[in-house]
Image (tube, rainbow, N blue to C red):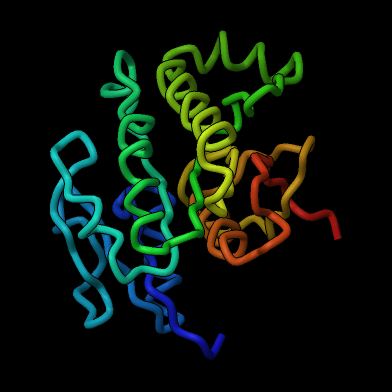
Length: 216
C-alpha cells in the first residue's frame, strides 16, 4: 500500500485495538490513539500520536479528528456500559466533528450478538446472548443504539459496522470475510486484520455485517 493515511483508533490498547495499531504502523501509516493508559501501547513510534483520555471524560472531538483520514472504534467496557450508553453518547458527539473536518469513513466494532438496526438475531445467537453472554447485555444495547443512530442520523458518513465474533488472543486461524449471515468466533488478531481491510472497502459502507472465516 503506497498511500499513507492517518487512523484515529479508539480502544487502541484493547484486544483487537492493539493488533490494529500494530498493523497500521507496520504498513507505514500514522495512528492517533485515544487511550486511558499510554503505557499499554506498543513501543514508541514516530508515527504514533498518543492522546490520553477516555470517552467517558470531556473530550475535544474536533481536535481529536482534525487531520485524520479514518476513524476506528474498538471500544468496550462491560462495567461502564452496564448502565450507561457511553459509546452512543460519544459517537453522537464524534460524528458532527467528523462532518466539520471532512472525515467521512468510520468503522465501529460491535459484538456479534448485537442486533443490527431493524434486524434480528438468529435463534441460536439470541439464545447465546441471553444465557452465556447475558452479562454483556449492556454492551449490546449500547452497540444497538449506536447502529440506530448511524442508520437514522448519519447516512452522510461512510460508516461501517463490524459485528465481530471476538474470542480470545492467539495466533491467526485464517482470513475473515464479510457475511450477512455467517458468524465465526475469531481471534483478536484476525478481527483486527479484517477491520483494517474492511475500513477501506467501499462495498462495506452502510453495512452491519458479521465476519466469518473464509472456506476457500
